Length: 382
Image (cartoon, rainbow, N blue to C red; front, side):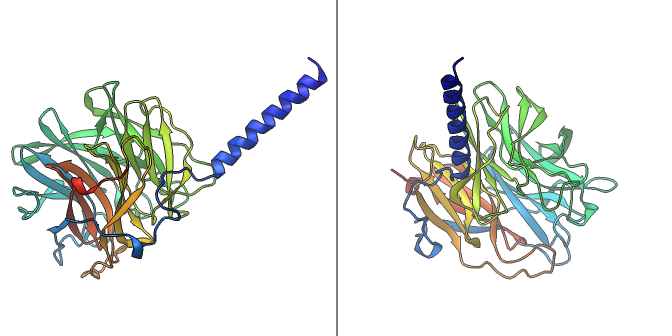
């Protein structure tokens, strides 16, 4: 090989490295709407939204609430959440819920779904899953007596609605996995759900973005998969997913900056690109995302701070977001009861589409559970 050829190869290699570094340092364009991203004061409210309260905390009972999830099953709308007695994820925590027979206007009695466990274990918020005409709930279970600074033995426990009772079907995911999105089918016959992995031995607060993959149609066995991140970056990796036939997009809470991290998988969730900063704002809070029946991408997230809950939408096939509306804005009520981690906010969203509407559940002041119903025909981007 001639010296000229060697120099040419070295130059090509250096050019490739520089290009790769430049790409990594350039925010990924998840937002392709007006630049800069509009300030909250300039974002319009979505027309036609209705608001409801699912559950209000009762003084002296469960006074902390986080992580509302939703599901329709046999015409009934179910909501669940993580309840703690006083402080976030204290050792009296459960996954609780209510059911509505009128689409969310009124709600039935409070009931435990995952009611804690003997010994140090307690439960927290999770997700619902409609599968083979049965309704499942996957709840986070851990030793929460760590005072909110770690979740030793974190794993996922499955519960099945059997008549009027929720029955445990055992641990379905180990390896410190916390479920955060409804499982979705992939073209290979497996299911995927987003979550995070919380290793209490890591520097706190710090958690990895993650997904869990089912063993085919066996929904009682899930394998957690880490989404890689740049070493040294501290994140709180709550993961939302947009599942498409050829690619899965993960939208991840950052923590270090008020923006969304993004990663991609082209092999049904088995491997992922390293998390990269995007240009989509996020006020250091959990995101929920998906694809509407109209083909529009959507992401529900907090902007500027947790006083504004908004929805961003992208045109079908655009693989980005270009319009945004507010769902709730302005401070929610001051917590009525003291508790670690509580302050005014509309946070931890979860969404399902049904009957021409997008049903969005969230925590209010980390004390109550709220529901907003959005008309899908208003969620248009071109």
